[in-house]
Every structure is written in structure tokens, then in C-alpha cells.
Amino acid sequence: MTLTNAQILRARDAAIAARLPQLHSIIHAVCNGMGVSVADMKGHSKRDPVVIAARKQAAICAREAGFSWAKIGRAMNRNHSTIMMAVNKA
Image (cartoon, rainbow, N blue to C red; front, side, top):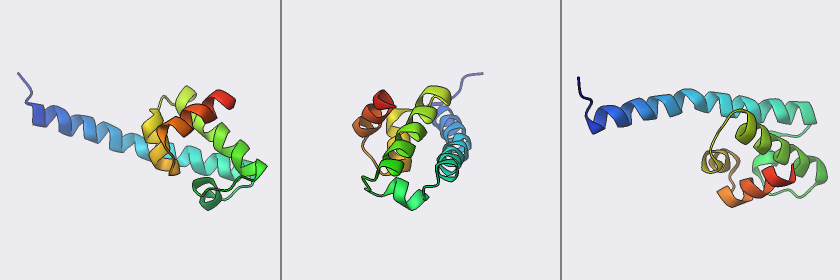
């Protein structure tokens, strides 16, 4: 049986959608553990606790969970290059 491009794209989109709750649960877990609000994490605060939590969250999502830079960036309202830098500094 040969799959059409549309079927392949639907399967890919379903797999991506299934992983999104995992990404958001990582964000919430890191925020709760570090005592930082999700709003602060997604905002542009430069306070040390927020920056440290954002770096840890980006590193966990990239290294442990295997999410792409772009997907993490979208979840955190950041550019993918900002996420790359955060992971490198974590």
C-alpha cells in the first residue's frame, strides 16, 4: 500500500500534535520548580531567576526531549536562535 503525500502530512501533524502537551508540561514543571511564572518565562524579563529557568527549560526540551529549536522558540515566544544560545549557555 502506498501512502499519498496528504496521508503522510496528516500522520506527521498528528505526531507533532501529540508531543505538544509534553513540551508545555516541561515548561510548567520547570517554572514551578524554579518559582517562576509561565508568563514571566514567555515574556521578556531579564531577571536572573527567569533567565536561568528559561535556559534550563530550553536545554531540557532540546537535549532530553528532542524538540527542534523552532518548536521550543514558538512555545516560549522566542526566535530559534535565542533558544540555541540559551541551550549553549545552560
